[in-house]
Length: 295
Image 1 (cartoon, rainbow, N blue to C red):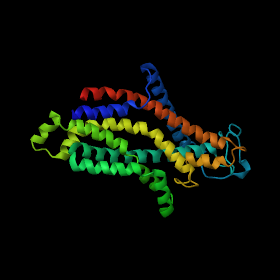
Image 2 (image 1 turned 90 degrees about the vertical axis):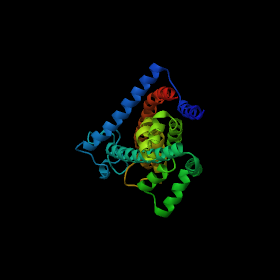
Image 3 (image 1 turned 120 degrees about the vertical axis):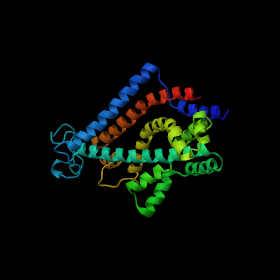
Image 4 (image 1 turned 30 degrees about the vertical axis):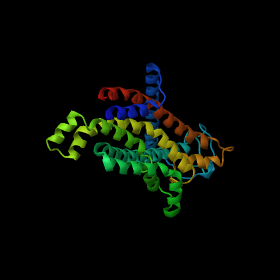
């Protein structure tokens, strides 16, 4: 009965995302993966380009439009900085911070979920209480308060978003561990004297990691959007270090004179978020099949 209820929770969480037909879903997920790969390759290629310079100002070439000057193929901003270089540098910063946030969510959520699902009892109650407290903490308000005390920084944003968005990882890890802890391949080594740490690492974690990978992939787009919004509000990376959200904020002041300053980073956000969202559909659809076998 416990297994059925736990796996029903996992299946319900998986079904929340929109589904497509098999052929359409595969086509869209493949297209999304290609878009994400192309954006990442473009960011890397621009960094290796001989003329890459995201910080040098050149007032003689300020506000150049795209495709006017071959030295600045996507134009320049109001102080003559190359927009292609700045968008690429902002993409590198944004993606690295996103990876760090998702990694913190992954580790914290998986560890707490495994402990709650495997041990149950008081451990489950304590972790459930921590989860409720984390859900009650508004990340943006918490980040504003801490930024006022310590000053905005990348490390502060990673810690705040990393320790306030791990609950989806923990819930899925808990449900999977709860459904597996009574199985024969888990009970047998326990009866032979194996430690709880060894049982979790050897017999439960391999079943949990694929599900955690799916949650991590599906959360990338939302983390990028949240991070870009915080950078736009001035709560993240500070100028002159470029980020996509920060570039949108800079360009907003000159929207009528040089709209490409907003369009280019906005387009980059749209492509990477849309690409990861469609790419994650394949993993979301396939994740229900192994769950039915375990059940």
